[in-house]
Length: 430
Image (cartoon, rainbow, N blue to C red):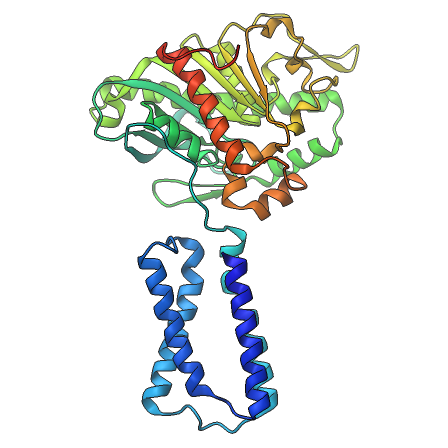
C-alpha cells in the first residue's frame, strides 16, 4: 500500500505541476480543496479500518493534517491566487512535496501494513509485560555496578479457567521478544502461557517497565559479524559461543525459576494459570541453541523446539584436531527441529552444526523438518513485518510464500507441544 500511495502522490504532483505550467497559473484554490479532500479520505479509510492505525501512519497523518489546515486557512482568507505565477516556484514546490511524501511514507514502505497470520484457537489472547531483576548476577555489559535485568512479555488465555503449560521463548542475535509474536498468539489461543524474553544487550533493543531503552551491545555485534566472516580461530569461536550461551541460559533459567516462584507466591491471575509441571522451551537461531541447552540441563523441561539453531550444547572443541565434534551423550528430551535452506545446507559440513547432522544417533528420536525455499528470517515474523529489511539482513528474498511458511511453522509447533505437553493429538511427523 505504501508504494501505491507514493505513486499516486508522485503522479498527482507531476501532473498538477504540468497543468499549472501549461496554464501559467498557480491554481492554489483547487490544490487547497484537494488537500482537504485527501485528509478527509484518509480519516474515512482509518475509521473504516482500510488503514489499520499504527506507528507507520503517524508521519503521513501529520502531513495531511497540516496541509488540510493550510488549505482551509487559505480558502477562508481567500489567499489562493494572491501570489504571482512563476514556473520555478511550481517546479520547486513539486520537488519539495515529492521528497516530503517519500519521507513520510517511508515507514509504510519499510513496514507495510499486512494481514496477521491466522489464529485458530478458542481462547481470546491477553498480554502482559514485566521486568525481572536478578539479585544473583551483576550486569557485565556496563561499567555501573547493577544487577542483571531481563524484560519479558506474556501471551496467555484471557478470562480462562484452569492451568496451562508454560512455554519460554528466546530470540536470535539482534532479535527482540516479539520476533515470533504470531506463534505466541496461536499457542496462547490453544491454552498455553507463553513468555518471550528480551536478552538485554543481545537484543536489538529492549524497553524496561520504567521506560528505559537498552540497545544492542557494540562488542556483541562485532563478535557476531566477525563470527560470520570467519575471522576467529576454532578455539576462539568455541570460547565465544560458550560465553554467549552462558548469558542466554542464565537468563532463561532465571526467568523460569522466577515464574515458578511467582506461581506459588503471586496471586496475580496470570501466574495462577500456569501449570508448573508442564514446561516447554523454544527459540530462533541463537535462542534455539539456548533452548536445546536447557533441554539438556533442566529436568523440568519436557519439550524443546529449535528453530534454525545449532546444537551449541552438544559441541566439543578438540584442541589436538583444532576442530569441533559432537557430544556422545544421548539427548532424551523430546525435540522438534525446524530448518530453513540457510541452515539445512550446512548440516552435512564439519562446522558449528556438526552435532545437528541428521545421522547423529544421539538425536535419533528428534523430529526434523525443512522448509524448502525458506531463508533464516523466514521463520520469524520479521518477514511479514518488514520484507525489505528482512531481504537486506538475510541477503536476498526467500522463495517460499511468507504466510504459508509462518502459518505452517506455527501449526507444527502447536502440534508438537500439544502431543508432548498435553498428550493430545498425534506426533507431528511419522
